[in-house]
Length: 302
Image (cartoon, rainbow, N blue to C red; front, side, top):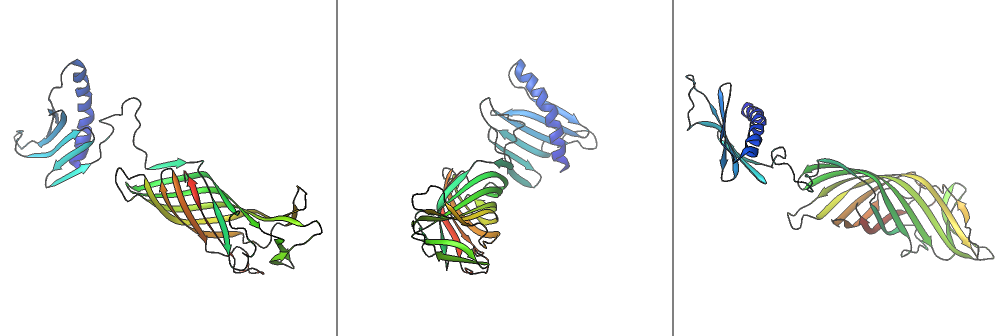
């Protein structure tokens, strides 16, 4: 540990010296003395070779007994100390990016403005009359935080806005009667053209993302996790006859104010296919206790 601190201090001094000499002409070898240590910087086949020696009691350097040796090349580092040999990523302080090139992505970063669309459907007692091919879910990513755990593993937490639009066929409609959520036949002389149940959530997803393959397949990503959801709005509406304005049958409808979904996704950047399933019933235990919601669709940037 002490040797590496010494190396870092000496390199900061030596890099300035090398930069000045490189501007004046061809690279030259440099030797620095720091307390009881000697630091040598040499040009080794176009790469920077660094050696650290410790002076003996007489102040003499022993060339055959170096404490540290490192070769710093474009794109990699090889370092060798007493009894160990390690490889480390290239430190960008020694090899700054050229103009027009970007540095590697930070271990923590934020993204926004992703979106997804998919089919949403119900299971259980509240699924009668549901138009599965027309019931859709829209999800908008407001903000997402990413923490890189390793080159192939990342943890993400976000804030999304989700809209579920459930379409019903015939004269089926959701309404609340005597404190219970019910799926009823709603009839009027003009006839019911269509019926919809709208539910909006503020979702807080937490997912673990995994990239199992190296290049050139590193853009493939698998993720799984959970979504905690808070209901922000809901309503049951019917469109009667030729009227454009719907009739609202209810807003609260005994819908569960919270939800917890499991989520899985396979993604080939930036497009993915996702699936979610709710672990909590859609309605409270008042009439439709066995109704659950799930969704399958495509995402962009999520």
